[in-house]
Length: 482
Image (tube, rainbow, N blue to C red; front, side, top):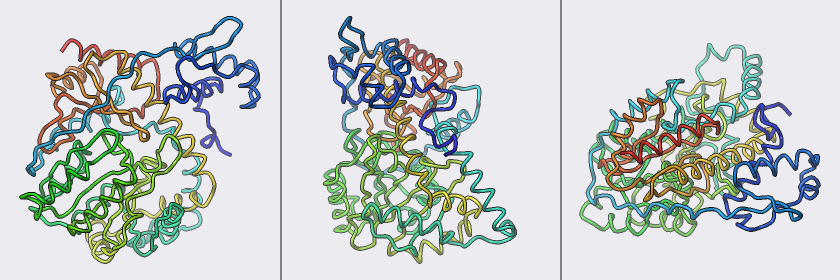
């Protein structure tokens, strides 16, 4: 097993990894306030640790203020202050809007590429959260095996071996996928682009979550379409009842597609209940509205219980499922996919005229990697890292941000949605924070109608360090001082 596949972070002592795992159980409520933690002996035996390592882990939690030591009794979970409330269900305007978010997004992305800025803006995790060295070895082996690869065109719709692996993984979730409908794309953004162009034309109305990912809004903007924002809850996701009302309303006939991220939507981190996912499929089928599912965060469930994609309940082949390895395995490879269903031929033609294929070397590397057991080990580690960081960032918001703040409580992914007291202007706050070399994503980026000016999204993908802790504290002070 390579260093990439171990459970500890590089250069992080084992006792801190154990402390992080216990900290997460406490943050999730699995160890309640006042509950006794395992003794040093119990912890040593359960996790096969030395007594020294077990004691160091417990003392690290004590230093964090998470637990307290009671003489002759052991360590107990400390009473924590009341958690901040979640954001309420959004209330976007009822009319569809042209999209104009590109100028704000361009500034955010430029700042995110500056290594001197503490980057809470773009949803990009740490590079060493991924098995980089292992994937590089697979890529090098693929280059040796296929020495003429760089002089050849790739299969237009993707390497068959990779398409097979993707279809197999969905089959394990109970989702029937024909390998012929899998189209390999340049990341999830190309998959979403192809899906939108296949089912809608300029001028069409696209129903979206509110707030929703600004990259999707930019795609809608670039294609001359309009976005209709649907009320969405930070925990349960898009309101199917609100979508049904919109479809029955005056603009219902113009709605050509609904784009939704059922599992850990960006920026809310919401997870649609299964019953809602089934109802969404039936509603779209009844109104003959294309359903585009963004499944990019599906693998990042903190509890390791991979949510079943909406595509599972599709019986007509009308759901277009978009996914990618960009968040779960290899951000730099830019390998995504589109399960095209009955739209296969139309999607294939648009893929050919858009990019005519996707680079082969990483397709080979990923298909080889997926044939091993390493992906399961990597996902277990990645989920733990995401969960630990989200819990720590949320604690920092609770500790340093002003009264009246609300924060999402995602069960997966690595972003937080923070609703600040009314009257806060996150566009003005962004300028002040950037002057102090701190970056975040202002709320209006996530709305076609410019809403959520008092909200922001935090990327929790930066490893927790004293610099990160200080930056969050400073950001809280900037909010407090207006």
